[in-house]
Image 1: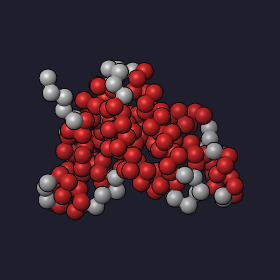
Image 2 (image 1 turned 90 degrees about the vertical axis):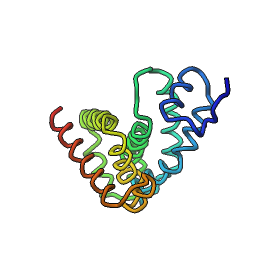
Image 3 (image 1 turned 180 degrees about the vertical axis):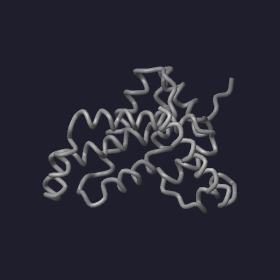
Image 4 (image 1 turned 120 degrees about the vertical axis):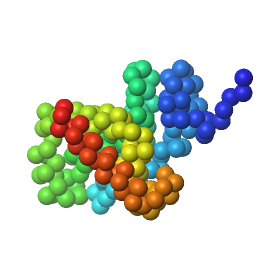
Length: 184
């Protein structure tokens, strides 16, 4: 049996092989998503003095552990973004943030309520689950646009479609997500 190169495997196949005990697929996951997650974390942490590379490194450590402790299906890309987002929010709420901006420190303390954090994480988990349920092209268009920050032109190029078709995919994805989140 000829083994396919890891770069040709889908996210689901990489996760399955990693969960089966092979560490090499996680290197491919890291290679595939690290730069995108760093860009995402930089946008979240812009001007705060926190290091996006550290946030993403910690997110990958958590993802490594998380993938091994459960067999539940996941949509890898949105799940990684959720972890990176949560880590960036943790950084923004940390006492270290007070050294950069006194106004921010007051805001960080006000939003540090554990109940609110749990609720925000539950909402994010529901959102990630709903994103995973979207039709594949809607999901891809939405993730490229909202998480990767791609323009409509770049998204259309990656999806090999037109800009109007890409806009339509994103509108339908947002509409489907809104309906699903409000129904829950």
